[in-house]
Amino acid sequence: MKRFAFSLVLLLLAGCAREATLDTTSMETVGKSIGAMGKRLSEDDQKKLAMDVTLKSIGSVMAQANSGNSKPDLTPALKDWHGLTAKEILAKSPAAAMPAMPDLPDFKAQEEATQKSLEQSEWWKDMQKRKAEREAKQAEK
Image 1 (cartoon, rainbow, N blue to C red):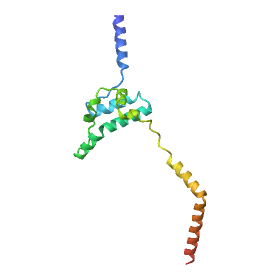
Image 2: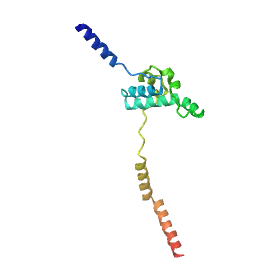
Image 3: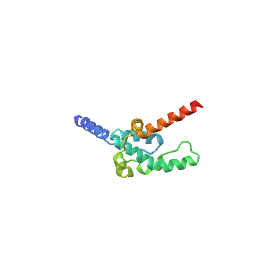
Image 4: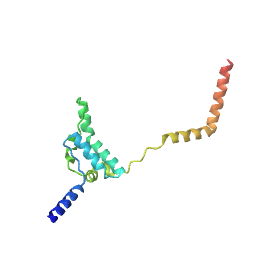
């Protein structure tokens, strides 16, 4: 009896250790399985997996949208990935060769630095002086 209980516990633990796979039976299962697969991936690999799914399904989604379908279905496009793990999908996809996706730059900081640099330039000072002279002439009229 102890051996049976021990074997059952080992069997259950082995089942829990399996990697999540993509289930393309419905849109709901696609979403759930992608979420489950993403939990074990690094942030870069999560981005690559999202890119893979997008690239793989975009043609199908566009065709469905053009035919008037307001709720496109990803399952036909992803059917050949059914049962694959995230690692298997990433290994066979074009995104696997892509470098890590960089974070978006801080455009506000760049804009402020450019504005400050511009304000310090002689050209900017000359333009501001000319603008003030024009405004003074118009005020005199």
